[in-house]
Length: 429
Image (cartoon, rainbow, N blue to C red):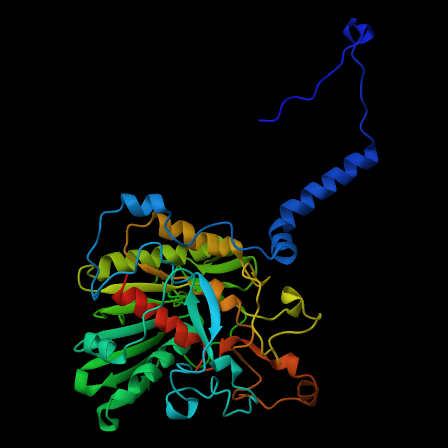
């Protein structure tokens, strides 16, 4: 504790005196009120823009929480991660020996939105980075072990197009050891199923960007600006997930429409619909709690595993990493080196909801915290090197930054590492 500053007293200071009134300048008072309201309204934005700090919350259980938990025998585990090993904390290292894990041209399942080489990307540098945890090594991905584990089982990715990219990545990591006549893929509505016939196994993707029922549930036509989510409706989609042995959920980007979200209180079939506006944080918390309840009621913790993938960052503002105003992921070929980098696209309040909901839940879900590691990879987005579904205008062609996709990721690339982390947590929790 600091010692108090010494105070000297004079005889006059000890003499009794009448209290004096101190007037605050009206200009100073007005300034203080203005600063107070600005800090309340925009405090979080200032933190993102000026601080570029890591979130102040933790998405991992604290050591105390871990010690108090009873040890669980998780399904599919064949070992465990060494003590004090956080596979999500580390750095990217250049590796031209083991990367990439496959060639783009060798995997026919990659959608044209993700085939960057086919669509003219001039460099391949983004393919040669391997994730290295700080205090341990990531287990090597073993396709044979993965397929043998999936024999007679269903693995399912549920969420938006980012989870679909992860689903495709998993197929690319596995399909080479499956004979050509023993594999197939089929899409029907929201469900895409890859079948490994010899193993009687399926790897599936189910389109549900909010997990709950919404007006964006059409797997093809879903670009709706005025999005509406129906409260308490997870079973609308959840009935298709029943029976899965491994589920990987994600949901984030589609909630980010502003500060408010439209929540439907009744049914989409009602003639007069009751729609209320709630904060994005409250709406997202509702979605997270619905997912946890569904898992608790439908997944056997002794036989199944459930994962949740955290926020996938975008790189839409070059000023975040010291670039020029107006820059984005277009023409970016290097990584962000600052280990504390956190882009202004972050919604810390939403990420905080994830941390709070998971911390309070007793439902066993493994969090794949891919956010920080992906924040460094401004080089790995599809940018302009993808199939364009609409003809580009002359203005767009003159300014490629204007139509660069800074949400999705090239394959092979970053999302292969997400699956390597999934592999590590599945077999070595």
